[in-house]
Amino acid sequence: MNAPAARKRSELAILELRALYEQYGYREFRMSRFEEYDFYAEYRSFLQAENILTFHDPSGKLLALKPDITLSIVRSVKEGASLPQRLCYSETVYRAAGDARSFREIPQVGLEYIGEIGLYAMCEVLSLALDSLAALSPDFIMDVSHVGLAGGLLAETGLTASEQAKLSACIRAKNAHELAALCAANGVHAALAEKLAQLSGLYGPSHAMLPAVRALDVNEVTHAAIEELSALCSALSHAGCGSVNLDFSLLSDLSYYNGVIFQGFLPKLPACVLSGGRYDSLLQRMHKPGGAIGFAVNVGLLDALGTPPEAYDADVLLLYGTDPEAPEALRRARELAGAGKRVSVHKAEGGAVRARETLRIGAEKSR
Amino acid sequence: MQDWISVALPKGRLGEKAYDLFERIGFGCPAIREDSRKLIFENAEARVRYFWAKPSDVAIYVERGAADVGIAGKDILLEYAPEVYELSDLRMGKCRMMVAGCPGALREAGRALRVATKFPHIASAYFAAQSRDIDIIQLNGSIEIAPLLGLSDVIVDIVETGTTLRENGLVPLEEVVPISARFVANKVSYKFKNARVREMQERLGALTALK
Image 1 (cartoon, each protein chain N blue to C red):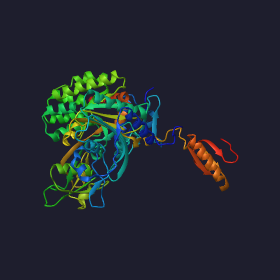
Image 2 (cartoon, chains in turn brown, yellow):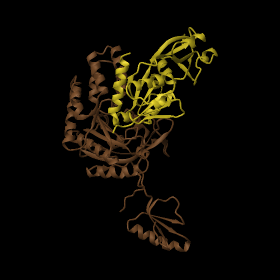
Image 3 (cartoon, chains in turn purple, red):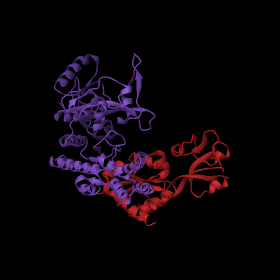
Image 4 (cartoon, each protein chain N blue to C red):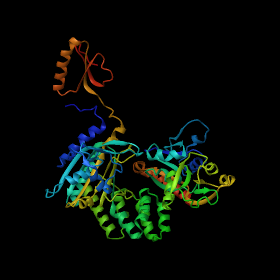
């Protein structure tokens, strides 16, 4: 078969990523039905989407166009199912656009590892995230963070949740100057304020950053987070998975993630193309055993990069002149298709079809 | 070879002062000083590119990655909450976001306080924190005229010297937040062009710390 070169980047990515996940034993999950709105409302704190598109089914039940896949995947894991479950998907989710005045269809490909989450599970999912990025672009960056670091440091401040949220916003914006001012205004100890500022500014390859991260250890929570990150990074490097950057300004504003979190970026795309993390708390909320870690790739973003340069709509542009030539055109088209070529048959000139080769019924000539 | 860095500057006095800083830290672009109709100015040697944007648009250019870094007022960052890194406070373009109006205009009148402003988000958040019921009237300029014509009870606007307020018989009533210019960076540019963005951040920081 010739490469289906005329496909959009997003379509190619979907095929490639699914093949990658299947290599590691991830089974496909298909969302064949609509969930009830109440389901999403109940787990609203686990949803990244604030607005949900709803509609009534013929019986009057309020249903929703899926804003998220992970919730449905976790719910689909039956009690007593053998764990771990490795599931992957390629689905369209519906979320409010950036201006929140309209909705967008977002094609997503992702995977979830559900079960006991140990070092291997984390490494496998992170390495697949790295492989996913490598499949999309030769040049990419993956940032890794751990909620335990900012969480542990913020807990030490003893401030209320809303005051901590203000500090979190500064960390997320790498805004060290306002972070320092807020800490001073709220009576946070200077040494702790300094650690928070360092945390927000820290950025770089994991091996170079880990010593600085170790200096931010203040309690059991930060200690466990640092140990986990360090084990994770050395395992990834041992397996030759490529390098990750540490960035603790990557914070989860949801109650969703409870361990390692990560995001992937490609040049020329101003938003993250891959995001994921560990979310055991969702399983606890659903009264299911074990934990989970996974990620989603927003493949729709890739089309902003334009179609691949060597794009052809067809391998062969087959032209015929008059209707009496039509039977022969069909015979040749079937012959070419049977030989694995992509054929586009047109009367006369064929317009804007980009083909590797042009054939003309009657006087066959190629260009 | 070093990456190019695109810098969005706010049109006007603040942008010109900000450009002076960039020049002093070694990212000059002499073409920008020449009076021309060009929109984009490049210095191939320093691999830096500047363009002027409406002050309220700088954050959008940076958020969307059309500029890697930029200079934006804190007022714009608070109002639009763009997804950018706010890397340093340049401690210039200082002013205050104020509630202003006729003396006594903030007294409870048993109805929603009518607030005219260019900054509906900042104004709503400020009064919501006081649990005060307000009616936002969004205007795009000449805010001071609103209370004079009875369109609003108060205004929420930027006050530099207070001269315009005084000349119109208005007084500053409460300070909402102090404002100054900030050095902001696109989150993805920060990652892919980390060394260059940080170099700028550190040099700007060293320069503004002297003030």
